[in-house]
Image 1 (spheres, rainbow, N blue to C red):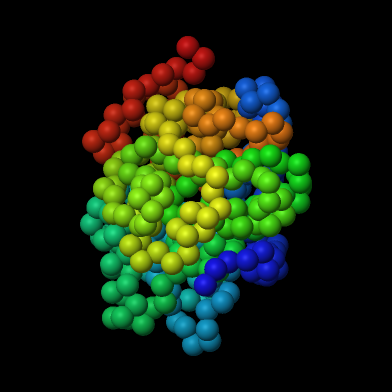
Image 2 (cartoon, rainbow, N blue to C red; image 1 turned 135 degrees about the vertical axis):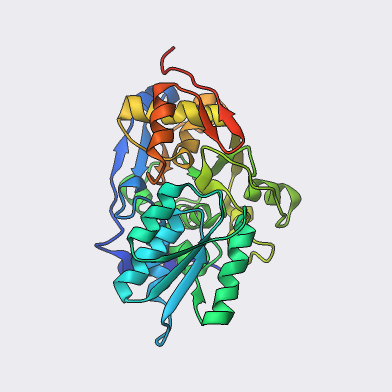
Length: 335
C-alpha cells in the first residue's frame, strides 16, 4: 500500500471548497534572510485552524456506509479536523488525547461537538484507548498520519504550492508522525523530482527523526515542547508514513526550544501571524542556520494556530514560559 499523485488529485476533488486554496504568501523578512524568495503556506487559516482538516475530510469521505462513529488519537489538530469532518457527516466522534495536550486544543474539539477522552501522558496511551473504543463501541479509527486517505489529503498542500510556484527549490515541512511530510513529498516530487523536501522537528521527543536514524519505528519519550503538535510516536506498526518519509525526505533537521521561540517571534513581529510552535520549525531551521538550502525559492508550511494564547503572548513579549517541567527563557524580540 502506498500513496500516489492520483490519490492526491482525487483528495483535492473531495476537499474542494472546504479545506483547499489557503493563502500562499511571500515573507519579505525571510526572503532577505534567505537571499531569495521565501513563501508561507498559511494552513493556520483553515476553518479549524490547522492543515489537518484536509486529511480528515478525505478519510471521513472514504468511510463505508453504515459507519456511525469515528475515533482517533491526537495531539489536538487532527482531533479537531476529525471532529469537524464527522459533524458534517452526522457521525459520532470520540477524540483520545494525553494529559500533555494544551487545554485550548481540548476545548476547541469539544466546541465542535466531539467527545474527548484524556488518557495517560503519551500518544501511545491515547492510541490504545482509541483502539479499545473500536472494539468496544464499534467506532472506526482514523490515524493522524498512517492512513492513505489522510496522507493524500495532506498532499494537496504540496500540489497547491507547486502549482502556484513551480520554481520552488525546497520545501521545509514540520515533521511529526509524517503524514504531512509524506503527502507533501509525494505531490512535490511527482511534479518536480529535483525539489528538496526537508522535514523539521523539535529536539525533544522527535519520533520520526529517531525512527529514520534507526531504520525502523522506535519508541520515544514524549516531552513538553513549544511545538506540542509535533509530539507523539509514529506507531511501531507504521505501514505508510515511515516508509514514505524514509524514501522521499532529503533531510531531517532538529531545532531547539529557543530557536522555536525566536521563530514564533519573527513570524509575529515581522509577518503579523499568530502560529503554533510546530508551525515555525521551518523558519527556525532557516534562521538558525541548521539547514543549507539550494539556490532558488523556498517555502514552508505554517501548519496551525490552535495554541494557548497566554503562552503565545508571553513568547512574543519576551517573557519566560513554563511548559510542564520545561522553562523556555524569555528573550525580547530585536534585543
